[in-house]
Length: 321
Image 1: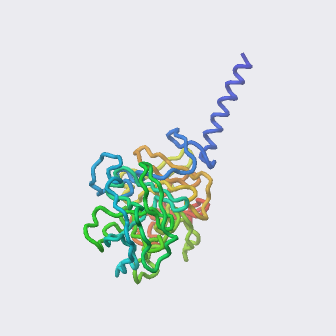
Image 2: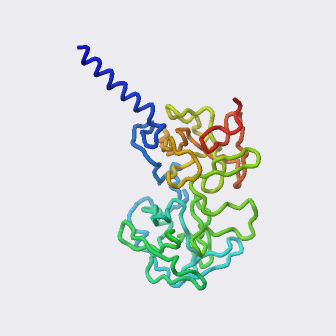
Image 3: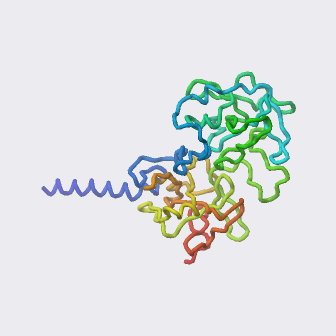
């Protein structure tokens, strides 16, 4: 009897230990009991907005319909935009775009289903490098449906369905994840932009040295990342719900290898009760602030005495002790 009881207690202790340490490990279990490791790319990081613009309006059915309509790039060219600087175009003069949720190393597309209806892939086909650019930057990937997609410096290339004429760049900045491509595959830089311009090619999460706050975490757009003192790390729980999320949007899941300078412990995806997937650092849910309008803003710092910027080791920056 005692032997059975001791065995039962041992099993219970192991289970409790596993649960209480999971969120502090590189791999563990989120609060909904789903296995998580390095955070998965989000296909719906903001609820109904799938990252390619909630106004996509290109139907709800999925499949390869968009891929079937892909057109070869042809003779690429460089368009000198007054707003965006040098922009890469296809042979017909249409702007080419890149997607922040894709990866260049290794080259991989995370735009599928409805996404390719809004953002038709650029077929590799007979692509030729633009005059004055390095032909070695051109490449291709094989998509899930077997089609070949053009890459530039490893980044998969797309057009935007709402660009109806050569020279249009209506896809610039859509969803905060789509940007016109420069000739070298980087994000086209805003012409004449000063220090307020979004830094190009930031990792999903990285560190910026703020003159007042010191080292703080920023997202891929250079926007300050915050924590809410009313949240908890274990059990992982967000106290920001409903209207709160309009002012404090969650940070969508980020690949662990798409970070720089931040703690990797407890870097897991939080499946919120409202269905939104949220990134956490050291098990703490993280957010941005709608009142920050440009990279470098820290308008959310200290709001309500409960919101604070996040340090690289997940601590609250400048919070009262």
